[in-house]
Image (cartoon, rainbow, N blue to C red; front, side, top):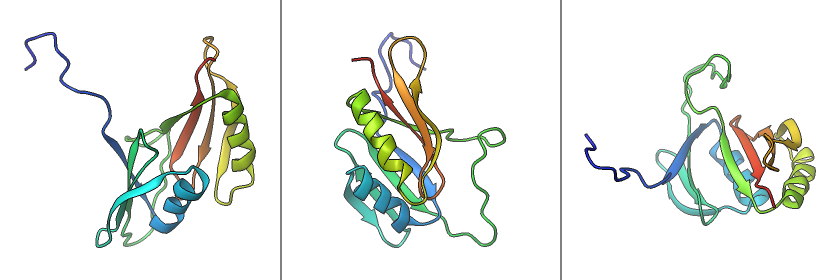
Length: 138
């Protein structure tokens, strides 16, 4: 298909997350992380949010029975969403905030990621998606 040595893609435009409660997950992104709503589709229902760099689409499920949460050992699909933060201090401050944020489960606190001076943490946010926050070496 691509016979030349040029890139076909140009980065991630957006990531879509399916969640059980649009209001709950939207509140987390807006109130805790400072994302702004840039669009919505109320009849779906869906909201489009951005931190100024990354856009996310939050799609609410319409369950007809029991909903199965993602199990990283058993399911195919998005393993986690990784968001960059500006510094290790911001990462540690965010960890302290998320410890006391309702419906957030910390999977692991900030720790080294590899040997390049990067730190990261992982949590489950309201609605269930796994989100990694990472600070690059300073």
